[in-house]
Every structure is written in structure tokens, then in C-alpha cells.
Image (spheres, rainbow, N blue to C red):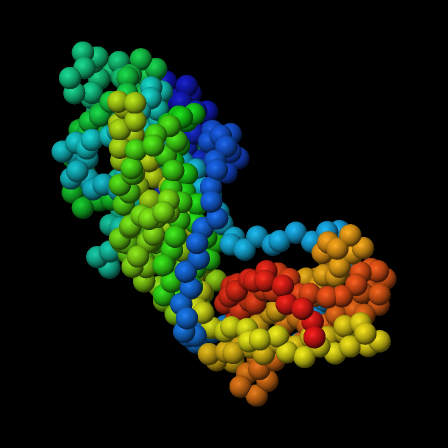
Length: 421
């Protein structure tokens, strides 16, 4: 057996991304920022369904009372960010395999020396009865590079079994190999000598710390049921067209494959199937890319979480404003809803300074129960704050945001100025 201590620290620092392998946790965000370098991304286009739909299931927030808040602001107004996005960066990939595949041998793309390979035993519940995979002893793992003169033992720098990894903080029933620095990039073959349960499930994780070939995925943080998801995908160090595959892991744990298409610099997931049921859980888009860069085989997996929601309400045209001594006190908005529920409305009030520029005065928010009998939310304003600001009309509402508190989801955000009347 090779030296466990040598690998304990590298495994701890390199394999955090696979510590919870069932969830395929992606690269640590801090490490991602350090390895990825600057990424220039355009705002994602947003696609939303036109029809309103009532969510099923129990709403997360069902309180009936109305509450409101006003926060004083100052300074010149700058347009709000219209589409919330999240970027994940990966220098690794995952593969789900069976015991039968590991006994036959699987191919692994490795783009740099010193890479880390982990094999984690999983529990499969697909048949109704859990099938628990056995952990794999490092001595039973064979790594070969077809066509190379290097012997298998020359390809591995050190190994660790599940007990050693548990001591290092990774108690997920896995084994690991740290490849030698003399092991060149190439298409390797990994095989397990011990006889495994053919139906047992394993997760293979190849981590290439510090690799320049990072895969960046930018997705919206929320997606309405029935909408198509547009996302940005970039593999560093290459301008070649990518051919990714994808699946969605929904908040309830189910998975569905999705078809991808590309146009105008963006990718689109075209057949996302989501439940209308209210849930506080997150869904995940998982992407896998396999290509050649600089003559080296590169495989990358990356994922990004997003909130699924039902398009349950929309704002109507701005209603009447109540004034006091030519200063605004309240403004109302009609809310069209598919079903009654608790909704939140917020906006920024602005005025015009002496230089003709637009300055912010306050942030106003209100939350209340909206039903067929009461389909209006009234935003409170503060006439005294408006007076003290010294700003002049036209007073405008900006960054108008509608949220469904029953789903804990943003339904709309518009920065088109609406002048009070």
C-alpha cells in the first residue's frame, strides 16, 4: 500500500467539490475566482410565459396582514440589474458508472499531470430497495495509459482508502488516486480488479486543480414554469464550438434530460419540465462537455442552481397617486393574480436635481394578501422625505419589483420609469 499521509492533505483541499457526491457539489466559489481569471459575459435574455398559472401545494408564506417599509436613499440613481445571474466555474468532471463498467474498465480524459481521481460508492434506490455499493480498495484500482511505455505503477503518485479519507474529513465511502507528475495528458483506462456488484452505483470524480481549461456556466437564478432557460457556457483557452449535454435535477430530486440549442452567443435548454407545486427547494442545471484543446482531451462537468417558480401574478398599469401639498404620499398598483396569495411589491422613488439628473429619494416596499376582492397593493411614500431631498418633479418609480411570497420567488422586475400622476 502506498503512503496515505502523502495524499491526505491534497485530497482534503482538492476534493471538497465531490464530498457530497450525490448532489455533485461544484467547485468552491473562492477557488473558482482564483483559477478562472476574468470572464466577460453578456446579460442573459429572459423568456417568460404570458399566461398566469396558480401554483399547487401549500404556500410557504400565508400571513394575511399588510406590512410596509420605507428606506431613505440618496445619490444619483443608477439602473437596477434586470436579470439576476449566477456563474459556476469548474476544473473537474463527474461520471456515474456501475460496478460492471468498472470491472470492464472505463475511459477517463486527463488534461494535465498530478490530477486527482476519486471513486465514491453510492446507494441506488431506483429499484425500490436500496442497493448499497461496496467501497473500493486502492490496491484494486488499475490505471493505464494505452500506447504509453509508462508502467501502471509509474502513473500513480499516492493512494488513499475510505478510512484515510474519512480521517481527512471526507466520510463518503470513497477511494482516491493522486496521479504522478510524470503522467502525461491523455485518454486513460481505469479498471477495478475486485469483483463488484454489477448493478452497484459509483461516482468517478476527476479533479484537475489549477487547470487553465475551466468551464464557466452562467444561468438565471430563477425560472418560470413553461419558460425556456438561456445560459452562457464558455470553456477557457478554446474558441471551438462546444457540444454539451445536459440534464436538470429538480427540487424534488428527480432528473430529466434536456435538449440544448445555441443562437446569438447563448445556449438554450428547450424542454425543461417543471412541477407547478410550490417548493422552497432549488433545481440544478448540469452540463457536461467533452472536447480537445491544444491536442489534449478535456472533459468538464459544471452545474448551477436556480429557483423554479410559477408565473402566478402580474402588475397592471400604475394607479392613482395620493398627494399632499404637491408631494406624493402613496401610489397604488392593480395586481392580476391566478389565485389569491401573499405578494410583495417594491420600487425606488426618484426626483430631478438642479443639474437635470435623476436622484433617488427612497425605497418603498409593501407586502399583503391579494385576492379577487382586493387586487391592489398600495406603495407608501414619505412626503417629508421628498420635501427634504430638495428634488423636483417629475417624481418617478424605478426598479419596480413584484414577488410571490407564497413561492419566495421574483415574478417581475422593471426599470422603465413610471412618472407619478
